[in-house]
Length: 246
Image 1 (cartoon, rainbow, N blue to C red):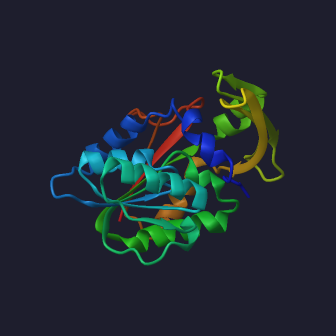
Image 2 (cartoon, rainbow, N blue to C red; image 1 turned 90 degrees about the horizontal axis):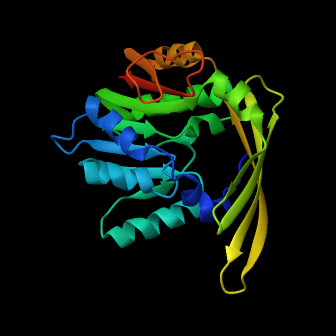
């Protein structure tokens, strides 16, 4: 399991390179905002992408498992002077949401599910929450990224305010990984660094597994691309982009 208790405090600093705008454009390309469509952002984190969906013209709600992440997201929404309902919930226990036009699970959030059944259960609940012809957008780590790129650790980061050392270790399950992160965050009052540690587990599956499971729960069409391009994934693609239609 992954803990976001302290991680929520530094999450946004570490996500500065995430192509949030590309994600919005990917969704808008297939789900135009002409009629203010309902969008559910699952794994909304600190709300950065959620707010961008709102600004793009969607009627947005968000859910996340982490209370700490949602606290930051609520504060950010409030500062923007907008209204976005946010709920604490696990994606594989999604309930109470109906007739959504669009559902997203962005930024490899599905890879935090630890087993096949949790992924299938998530797909089933997303399917039930969508209206007919509704669309489901999500991305996952490729096998190449999980088995090759992540194994090139340790990775380091230092911008003067936050430093981290990121080690990875292959998990017991196929195509899984443990992320072990040590953070040093500068306290500007004392001019000292506070340390905390995090461990996160992620697991991915072959692309054809995700496709099979989506059809299994009832989706009528599945489109697979990679890295925000229109082409099909290659061997060295890192982010697999999947769109499914109910």
